Length: 627
Ligand code: ADP
Ligand code: MG
Image (cartoon, rainbow, N blue to C red; front, side):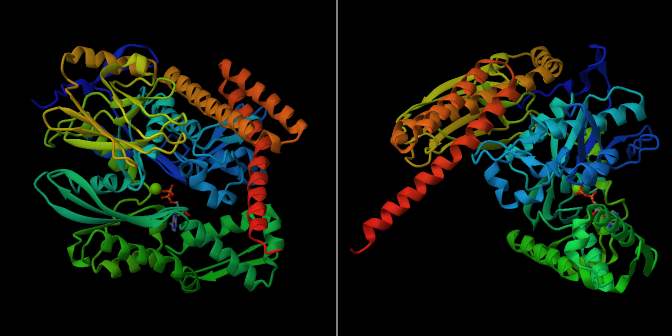
């Protein structure tokens, strides 16, 4: 028997009044690296972007923390102004950090003008503004809150439910972080949808369950480029391949124009860039110029004594190598999808930078067909998200709603947290998995407890099964690789498999999540998760901070134990002091204090490891030297 979805998708809670609301609208949100926006289905049943009076449609994805104490938070256009005047307190490109560890981003850390905390670890990054710590989830939630507020203001109704889009190449952790950001903003995130899928829906592609199509979605935004090849069959979108460059976009076009002006005016680039206000003026003029090429062949302007003159032909020559690079990515995507250009049925243009004529020409030429550019390329993803939301709301009877899991399925992780493996509303059959490791040296057993529900703490969710993965060979903490895979079949049977990859130790169980639970109970669980969303997320963040702190204490104590003789008396004493501060913070309920203590202990102990390494190298060298 397939999992019953009932009509629960239509029940929701009005967070403002606490009352139950039926038939509430669900918005679609494009949470972008450069710009974000929100769309809904209007009474004429057409998707429409929300334009809150006078504020425009696009909300720049920028957050500024102003005095006193960073408490005066602005988001969007207003925050963007501070990028120049107050860069340390202005956070942009947050999407690049979502669900990322420091290790993931260390190669491009110079890109950020604000402080990204360098834990030199595998835990998720944090951002420090003033003396406060923020996770990318919290920062993204501020943008989502702004979008929610604008939608509520424009539509004059509470907005509590949303579909949010992410790039097709986002991994599990980045998707989960996006969900959490929504939750923290007070939104019930019904589904995370791939941006290329949303763009296709906006063009009506994939809405007919009968059609089978292969499409290419070319997305060139402000700072990122990606191309996805999708296959649509029976109303199901499958990503065949993705390719791109996360540091290529319209910003590069602007920079190329500025460099051209600097050269033509015989100026010194370093001098110009050092004058941040002037550099910013030039950059804005360059962006304006680039956009003007849509309807004129030449721009002739002046900033102070600097001539800002350029023809469209010269501009196209400047950006040609960048555009060629995107075409190479398209080739690679086709190769990975094992497809020939002739097998692509449609090409869709997404992202503000695809308005550039040269880009359109070259993409159309490469694919050998006209591209879809009828819709506004910076709105198309949000419009598609609104259509997906409408489908989930059950407002499109013509569209087959596939069987979906009514509640999320996941396992317990450190600190009693729920780690979702299959999010609710996933269509069945589905499979998903994630890799875990041990937290203690020599750990040979791992308890795997499986839960169902939407709350962040497992104790609020429903337990489905528990078993031990036994016989993991003794290894240092963090070494074993335990894959946990969930397979939910069309009959609603969940198969859970745990396997330690280094040794091959394996264990499997089967449960039926719908067994013994009524639709009313499912509905109640969903409602509870909405009412408790904010508390849940802050609790989770506290627990995560504690877990990280405890791991840190464990590591540092072990280090001192093993290498104590290697530290000076003062260093040992200082380390003990920082450890004591961290331990004290761990007993309290303030996650900022814990992060601060972790950060300080880290700063202090980092040189030790480096010194130990140098020492080891010099010992090794000595051993090798001949007399
Ligand atoms: P993201 O998806 O990364 O948030 P967007 O899709 O909003 O980004 O694209 C932003 C980029 O689009 C910026 O570099 C902007 O300058 C560029 N852009 C916007 N309008 C035009 C235009 N008319 N011509 C060329 N580029 C444009
Ligand atoms: Mg985008």
